[in-house]
Amino acid sequence: MLGLASLRFAALRSCASATGCGGNTSLADGGRVSFLVPEVDEVDTAPPENVHKWRMVVAYDGTKFKGWQYQPSPPTIQCFLENALIRITKLDRKKLCLVGAGRTDTGVHAWGQVAHFTTPFAYDCLDSVHSAINGLLPPEIRVREISAARPEFHARTSTKSKIYHYKIYNEAIMDPFHNCYAYHSAYKLNPHAMRQAAKHFVGTHDFTSFANAAHNDRERRPIKKITRFDVTEMGPFLQLEVEGTGFLYRQVRNMVALLLQVGKEALPPDIVPVIIAARDRRELARVALSAPPHGLYLMSVNYDEEILKPPEGSPPISFGRTHQLSKCKLTFY
Image 1 (cartoon, rainbow, N blue to C red):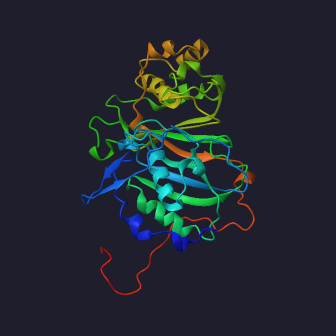
Image 2 (image 1 turned 90 degrees about the vertical axis):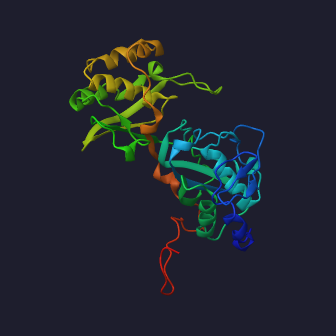
């Protein structure tokens, strides 16, 4: 077992403000740090026996990043997480086997992304590891939670459902403080019509009409189940919340795009089953463009309770350290 004392926190703090991920990366203080740049795009191999698996819940502001999936440049969320873990564990990325629950696209945000990684050793306490990881990450990425995971847990394939939010700012003038975090519609939308249209998405359907061509070689399974699709008014915001067993590439943004056209009363609510039945992406393209990514959030990834139970003898879940003042001093320093 690797003791936590072996973590060199002074070295970890030196790269806490890194802003890149491939090759030599500039730091805020003008220094430079060399990151490891693996040659393969993604690690998702089955871990060997006698390894320990760890689950992370990750939040990030996706504005500056090229999505989740690993690539050395421009930077991605997976790239930053892997480089932090490599420095802390002294393992290469093939041994870490970091896998995310979903490959969020460029500019998409997350509050509840889930990932897992593996190590050949165990930890007695996860708080120090948790603190070290967040110390290495840029401020736009934070690990909210770390826990031990069962060997059969898999961040992606064990998923029961996912919940996405899409935020729309529906006023004549955009609030600049939400410019990167909500789509601005200057058209006054009809929430009732959007709710009527959203009901048609609920159920098990072939969503080929709402899927862009993916940039990977995985077999696309277009039949997905949507369990709910809510449209909620929140002051100047409209929040669209959709939960489903899985989503195709850009499916949520394409569904939102059609709802926006319905909300503008350019299309009737019953256009949704017509587009679904066509099973042709070109049919949707005739009436709606894909909604931009900055309004989209991966809010949570849900699993069966049984598979989330940690193995016996595991360290407590880490939700981060709470710091306390030991003597009187200014809290800004």
